[in-house]
Length: 113
Length: 112
Image 1 (spheres, rainbow over the protein chains, first blue to last red):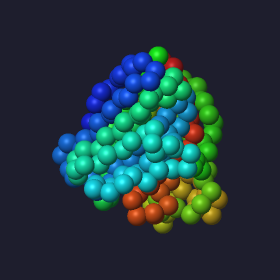
Image 2 (image 1 turned 135 degrees about the horizontal axis):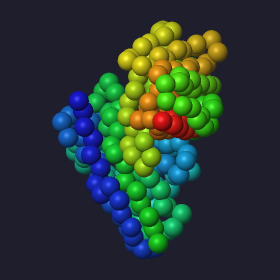
Image 3 (image 1 turned 180 degrees about the vertical axis):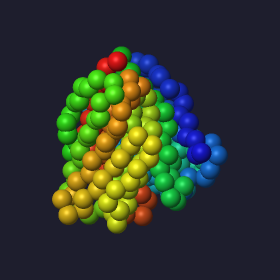
């Protein structure tokens, strides 16, 4: 089956630094990738939709300058949390769409101290 | 935006019992999907039901869809301790990218 990986699985960073999270589709090409955020005991909130080679589409309320998304190839999308603050601590999940179905990555736990 | 609402928010049962979770949504959909998430982990896709389907089975899972009521239910029969997880419904409104809108989820605890 289709596999999506995320790296790193966990990251702890200091306030003010930037963190990059990678999302890769391992055995298929993803025309579109999605980034979600999940707070403890809550649901997934869609942050942005990215298509290879074009700018990401951000959901209302998501700061595009804070959450930089790059979808440089059909198998890789990155999310960079810039100037991270403790309120950015969350579980970030990506998914990759092959034209039929979304396949989810295992998530990245970000803790900002 | 979140349009799905699951109930109950939390469900605690004994092994062997059945667990039923409900999901309601607000807009027209192309399909509805159910996912499981173990604590701190990613999502596992369980089942997809299309808008023109009313019921679907997969192993111990049974999903129903009532588009007139904009609701769906997930039934897990003969539950096991390993079924302990959060369960989410997600609706696909057919935007072209299969954009999913997730419900708030039901936390299921199955005690041995």
